[in-house]
Amino acid sequence: MQVFGLIGNPVEHSVSPPMHEAAYGACGMDARYVTFEPKPGSIGRVVDGASALGIAGLNVTIPFKEDVARVVETDPLAERIGAVNTVSFEGGPTGYNTDAAGVVRAFEHHGVERSGQAVVVGAGGAGRAAAFALADEGMDVHVANRTVERAESLAAVVPNASSGGLDDLRSVLADADILVNATSVGMESDETPVPKAALHDGLAVLDAVYAPLDTRLLTEAGEVGAKTIDGAWMLLFQGIEAFEIWTGRNAPLEAMNAALRDAL
Image (cartoon, rainbow, N blue to C red; front, side, top):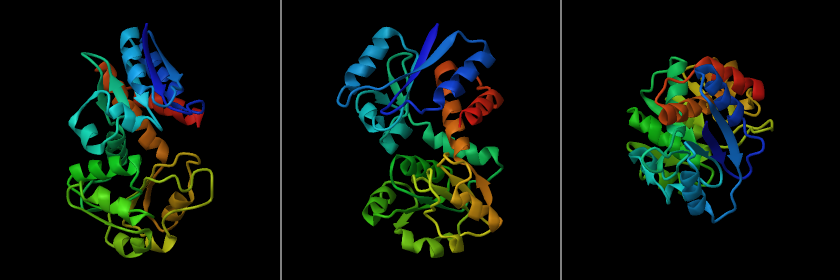
């Protein structure tokens, strides 16, 4: 039996186990997906222990993505982003960042072209992944963040990127084609990081928040005629990318999507 898993703290509310185990079932794999909550400062030992135990792959979530990046070999994209959310142990532990693929594949699945101007709200881990991913697709990226200095720091290392504060969003979004909310604003609350007046029908809007699926941002974006993509799609496609890295197989999208949405 192959064992895959998730390390983070906390992980008790994660919806990754049912999503991945649905994939194993659909593919006829003898595999399980389990969760672990390591202590802070123990990540080096955790990775060594997982390798020694023959664990086939790990996902990584808050607060360990940057820690793991420092103790494994990283692929070029994960190195640029500075965070790892997937580790493969085949041939030695190698770290990947599938959040970037989650953004791109979510837009691709919904028929959204990745060209023109993208605005990424948030300069944390999800924001970094989204900014690099869309820049690598050839888009001009504007990073907006409450703390402008963090936006400036990210924009300085992302190709063709600019930066600013949240007060600039209305003018910046006027000519934008894609908007990504990579903050936690709107998670289990009726809040939005983007004023409705800044939204328009030429936008495709991806909200990384998936609890609730119908965030205030997506509701208001839909009301002005924008294309909306809920956060479960990004979560799904980062999981699909991880599954494909670990197994070399095409992931069963429908089975994983159904299990994920049942769990939310």
